[in-house]
Image (cartoon, rainbow over all chains, first blue to last red; front, top):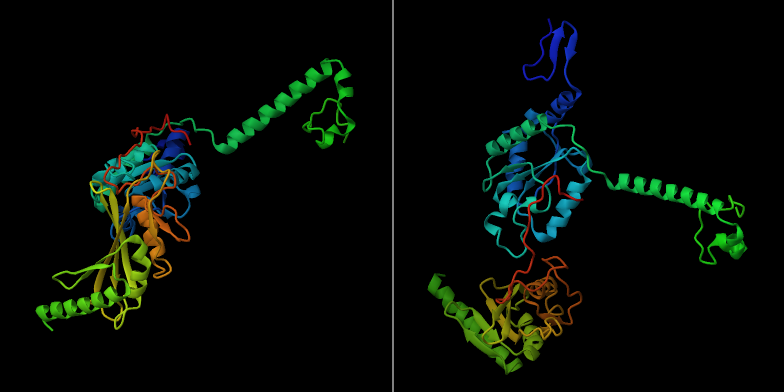
Length: 225
Length: 182
């Protein structure tokens, strides 16, 4: 009989038939292929690189450096975030696809650390983006980082099918749909109204010369076109 | 050469340099420190002639400007600008060139800007150093080709290395997944 891993979310019902929920199956895949972004801020980044390299080898857990936020699942915030960098960190976070997680590495990323009172320091990266796992230390040793990664895996395994925030593209699509609906409504209203108003519009209104915006849903059904 | 001999040689070189400078820029006040470092204090209007003289001084021109920084003296109402000079031909030479200007930014704050002449024409490396002093102390440099903040964000308010600087950022609040807005 085939054996399945002890921690698998799948259950062998009868030989050849496995059962499990889609949610658990997805989470199983996600937690074992957490790709993190190639992004370092300060001295903690050196320790992160050590954790990723051969001696501690995050690859064992399916975690790799990924050189694009578009293809990353999570990000180590490895170092002090200052006010000038904050907008860039936020931009990178926004560019990552959902679902995404953040691991704050070291005292600075957690709370601002020794620089918390600095005039240009953000006291903890959780003041600009949501953080899932905090790994304190100055810097944390790779072992602590591995522990943080395993905790993150635990979080991912328990993840629900959460509602994904709307992206800018989705918002743009929704707005376009709303505009089209408005135009349809306006056309219906125009058709219902007396046509006298049309004669007041000069024939070249469609060119925009008279300051009348061109509309794909013009009341006269595209005669000018 | 042991340490005492080295100190003696540096002191002699500094005294020679001070004597030469006194001829070129009579108003410059010079002090030779016990370790042989030369300290030169000039008024802002004499800064450029003094810098030009030092950068071409024989036999060891001070052709390397390693640092420009400021010192805030609120009780005297001035900010001191300090230029640290070295010489490539003579690594033991070190000169501290100093000048002063008002620290008053006007009322309302920022309506006027005290300034000293830029030394970019003498040492091109001064461009970034002077931007740093401008950023952190709010001192202008006349003749600087591109005077804007270098370390802090353009939106930063104030000059943090002034002793009366107050951090006016609103308090930071923790962001959660629920209230995060891209």
